[in-house]
Length: 464
Ligand code: F6P
Image (cartoon, rainbow, N blue to C red; front, side, top):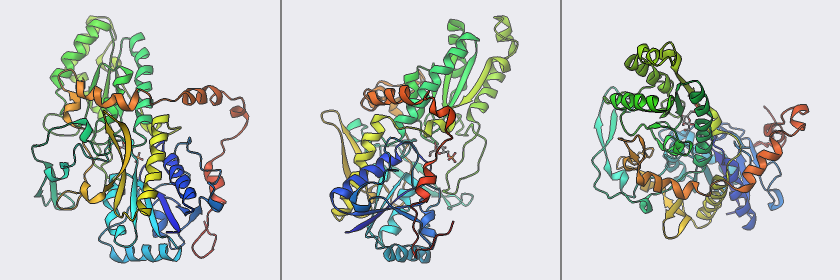
């Protein structure tokens, strides 16, 4: 193997550059050339295959900064379609013309789903990333627990459900304990909770803060570090009576309440609070409005008189407000935990290719007795018996639905990730850069401007 390719697919996450950096450092050690493909799989659909040589003379290009969020090679939500054989063959022939002997895709479950058809054409491995922390398994036999029933109304003609589990859940059994990007997303979200609290306290309000995560509640669970009063996650249907009782109790006690909800929360009938039923190009549901829908239900159930009685506002509408943490949880500088393990996972992906592994992923494993380490894991072991990879749901035992907070096991899950997740340089970086007077006079200099100058095309042509 002389030359490998690397791409970043799906939504950006804070540690993508760190993963690429880890792969490049390892490639340098092994004297392997590494090309970065521009804008994820989109690049492979482009006959010109715009790419950047990331390690000329086996040195990382200076634009590759592992402490910067986003991805210097760009990303998109384009994925390969396993059924489009001609398109896949075309991709393989383009990569061959470029002299690519192996491919590393940095992505989430959507990317992993498309790995097999590529792996049938050239050695392909995955390095994981996603703030949702939903790439992995709660235990190795989890894929076998999916059952499929036909449903003509769904796009694929089938619906997939989990059968009751026969496995004992144990933190040491988790496959891919945490994905790069998750810790930074939790940091931003927990800080958001902490900051919104003071407004809620000062103005006697009830705040509902919505975090990302699609159908998985890991980010919401992690916001426990910001000490919200109530956490609602997609894996447990929201019991509105219980929420309202708890809100009233807390409001009577402390004159403010802070609630965190995952964007994919569902009610007791299994209906999502979020209204939007659209999908992104990767086929993922785009959620919008979970916090607003929760607010509407609370306004209706609590009523204006409750607030008027205590002279704490004229109406429920005035007292209950919503905020989305939004894309700030996905952007910016990755904290130490994400940077460090992202780099190891990127490096491991190179090793997997060198070891001759194909259709495999590098994963982050945790054992209470040994701590974290990276391993290779065959991608097929993520698939159910029909070949589909499902996003990981947070295991229900990590959450206490009565307290609406992390359970004891949930706390045990969070501790190894977060206790030392922030490095001293993370705090120092903010101190040195945020109020740098230069920021006031210099325009923002985008990484895209510099990388653009390095882009090469398959036939040497330079077009935009
Ligand atoms: O999968 C990552 C994620 O941030 C989800 O948590 C969220 O639902 C989605 O992407 C939003 O994506 P975008 O706004 O980029 O379409």
